[in-house]
Length: 428
Figure (cartoon, rainbow, N blue to C red):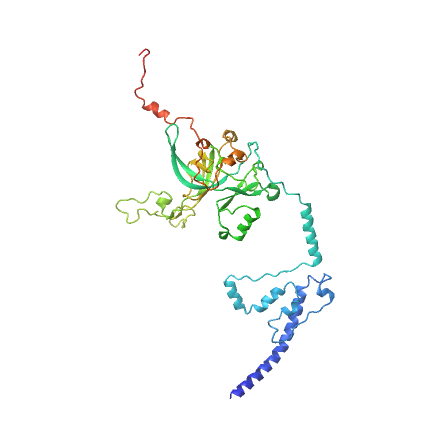
């Protein structure tokens, strides 16, 4: 019984193989000719192409391997050979749908230009490179005269916390301490190359293993240490600085005004009373468990919807905010500390952007005595400077610049409260 089944199966397979062989041979021949003509139509004009020299493509008619070598046997190094191999080995359409479900993208066809056209393209690119103007020379680090249209670069600082001091009039001044941590110029963009003049600054420190290869390659190419945060500042053409220039606290002057940009503290999901300052529902009779609720938000059937921008509960904080016109009260250049009087957004340890105030006129800015384009230390200052990161060094109090208020804010109150002025008679 078993032998009959085996012999019947072999006979059926042989008969089916013969019929399939003839059918597959015709299909393969037709597909091979069509694919060869389609893939090599753009290469027939080339004298070096196989089609031009008269070489013929070998078509496989083996029924057992026709399915797997359908396009591979007819490609012979054509530009779509990779696509043909993939399409032949991909399987059924159901498998392709499964691959697409997991984010698999079908490889695109890659067509090569004929050799004469490719050579023309390469010659044109080389001609454009040779005829292009040379790149501008890198900027030099030197003191320049600040004009009315000059725009200095800012810096990246870290919010260290808050403190307070008393001025010469006995007024308590709340201050926010900003620490400038190894802020350097890591990129220069000019108008001739990039279409704008700007400086890229990097601050902090970050390990290479915690960076992407592209980010690490950027710092390795310019030859500078890895930075935690990188930002770009638009500057005027006369305020460009060379690569590697340090931006320290001496870049700012006590008494000037600055704009501070940061990210506010994250408060999480909050209600309308904390997020938007709503008054809330009455805390008397008639209100049940809805004292802090926003109340009705609709407008009956007309318009029959809630308008966009309606103040409702949601996530609060972690938004970019800029506080303008803050006062630089004190500058400690030895420890890279800048003391700001004003509201600096963000929690302690968060990075902020510091720049000259945009709300002042050039005439007022000229009275500040800003170093332009930045502070250039003298050889004596470099010799007396402490090592980077050394917080044990005690700065010289004379080197710390402090803003002095020319007006006594308590003078008006002294005149109001002096009810019994003492007047001495002459001769007594």
